[in-house]
Image 1 (cartoon, helix red, strand yellow):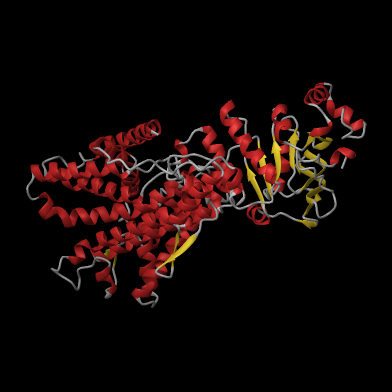
Image 2 (cartoon, chains in turn cyan, blue):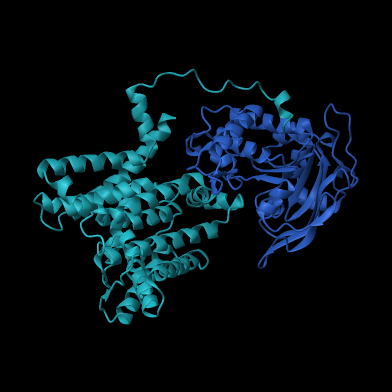
Length: 346
Length: 283
């Protein structure tokens, strides 16, 4: 094809002369970013809560960030998985099961610093099973992971006799949010959030700048096309199930280290739903193909703010679910409308 | 092959060269290719050949087996029986990736474009260039993808505001052009186009035909074109193969037949007639 140049129509001059963009143009550019809406919402919420309760940002930040980390780590995995067009309802149960894997390994003599990564391998195994059943056996992920949810719940309650266990002490726990050996420094309180930020940034790069990430988008956006282009679609989806499970398991380990106990009832199913809500209001489409990891992180902050912040400004406990419910639906409507608006602009 | 003389590709207009059908000139030969899906027989011993630089129209009704044959050539499906000879060697295509590695590119009817990725990302989808950041992290080389996409689109005369546009935001003709350009950028030996003009308006279709004409003029790439519009066939193709019920029943050079004759034959129930007489005998 090199020789085509000679006979092809004259090359079109690339681009137009640079024009300084006006405010309107800049706003239009912002619309292109799916994180824009949720960032604005997060800022408004922080301002309103701070106005209503002066102590909100100063005193509640560590609690808020810890909750954000819990939702966010799972939300990052759900966002990736939802971009492939799948979903994992068993995340909260992987979250509660993984620390038990580590605990039993530790009880069997494996040092805790080795038991933790081995437990994450176990979580990966659960994710692989979810992915295999969905992709290879053709069971919708909603059903496959619903089955896994109940299976894990029943298994862990039975094995643990519904009794919590004490998290083994180790130097690595400090890195994972424990304040056992680090009282008063404050770092332990935001360790989980720092993990979330680092992981979300890494996944944002993975999604946009690696083959795996682009294939993840391709698989969710146009599965047939991805197949026609020789992308290993099944492997891509299964790997996303695995990553989802590892992130959920890691969130569970962090919670076990931070709280000092491994609780079989820690992974309430609303945790999964909050994580999915975080991803959706953060700009990830349930239709597959489009989504953002950073949006999921900010979405988790918004969900945590509503949950933790509303009671502080005088709302009844539980009321937070009202605005959250509305936010989920509004976010989805905005996603659809903004996509249509963007198409009209071009 | 059910063909006689008509198997030889017609002389390329203006070139004065008649490609011989010796092994060296032949790019691809399919011999006795059959394909069954369970009890249903889609291809029943299909014979077809294409010379280097030749443009072959594959025509036939819906359900005649065109798409199945193309999927076999693209490495998607294995034939039930029969042999493909690629550059003279018997070849088993096991995957789309292998077919692409051999130099077989396919532009599918659905274009295989991903709406949620940019033009540049689509151009390299499945074979993204990688650069190692800090010597280890294998990231896609976005800059190189953009640059090479821009260069290549300029070369083939495709005009776009930005290679960073999402494919979702492009028109039908632009999408078709991107799909063709993507197939051409790896300098394939055989380009298969499945109804490239079906969803396009007249002007957009004409542009894509210009693109095919240009590729043909260079005689570097063979093309199998699935197309329904006969006048488009006569504009850009050297030879026509008519597929009927899983077999090639007519193999004729476009120079040996007129459009009117072809239409008349099709209307007169070509399948039955052609099976009963040497195909390729022209009108």
